[in-house]
Length: 327
Ligand code: SF4
Image (cartoon, rainbow, N blue to C red; front, side, top):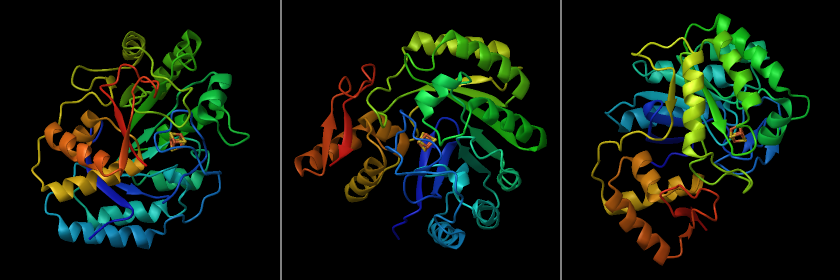
């Protein structure tokens, strides 16, 4: 069966083999981040609604469970926008627990809705919450994250502290750095202090690894990211067993899985419809050999289904490009 709101499992360095659920079905978000990998936000809103009803997603999940014997490491609520905007998120989390009782539930969030107590109560049912908070410098926050009017970085940060105090699960904080926008020493100093107060289970310092929604967003150089990792590691109460700061998207290539070429081609097209990617990124995300990915890409380019974008033109000169994108 073809699924509309379930994708993967994909290999994520933060969550292992992760089965993704799309709670929005389209680009609905409370922010319009410069770096967004799924494109520019179509509907900028703080309004919660059943964008994809719980019963629709859970019916797909039941079907997925019936067709698959190997369970993922996590089921991850996300989508082409902010999953907390789905007003049936609580029911979806409960349904994941019923259908996949052995699999921990993770939720990606941009943190903007944590001032809503009903959102916090629903999120409390998850095992892991992965909030993002890129800058505590208000001007940087506005420039990079382009939020709904009225949102401030300081209010969002405060609501995350309050959620932390009541949440029994784990928190993996993500900070994405964009060159010349939020990689300032002022932001680093504020986030170091904040991370000490929040005491997350992990901090992931990331940068762009794919073209963002707006060309102005560029990746920071490796030495800048290393500097931030080092400074934030020092600020976190870390133990050697649970390192506080890790890099995202630099993990080992997953075990290779043999699939027939038709299925490989379909899965690659579906993945490229979500975001542009390099052959390496596709191979990692889809657990395919690089050779298989490159051979399928060559056919798809020849057929005119996809096209290549030069990594330099995409503002990611260090990438092992080119990037491929659906026409
Ligand atoms: S990166 Fe996340 S928070 Fe930002 S616009 Fe995209 S979906 Fe929304």
